[in-house]
Amino acid sequence: MRVKEETEARLRLYKGTGYEIYCYFMFAAPETAAKRAMDRFVEAEKRGEKAPYYDLESIFRSITNEATFDAVKSSFKYWALYNNNKGPSPNLVAQGVN
Image (cartoon, rainbow, N blue to C red; front, side, top):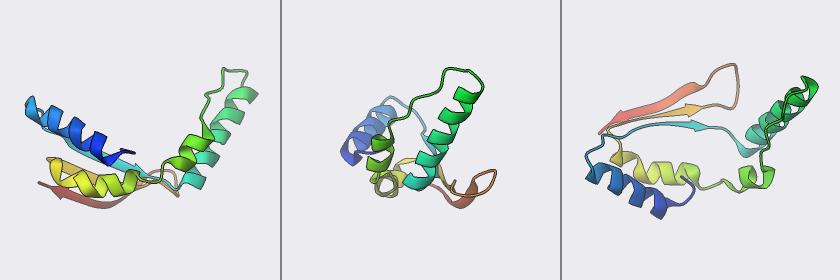
């Protein structure tokens, strides 16, 4: 959802072909997402597994996703917003039906 116009075009395409679209948006601050990515990398290395690579610059550049979600959420049949910053599982912040 980084680029609003691309997301809007994709939603129009899906809706135009008859899809009902449901969205579950998980928010995590870039710092939290970057730390989790690094932790997954380190843990995989410790287990001797192929470690997943995450481009940390990409994580820190992803700052428009929330604004795009807010702009297009009326396009979804159902949407839910979760805060995934703390705790063992995400917390529901808001939801809606259109």
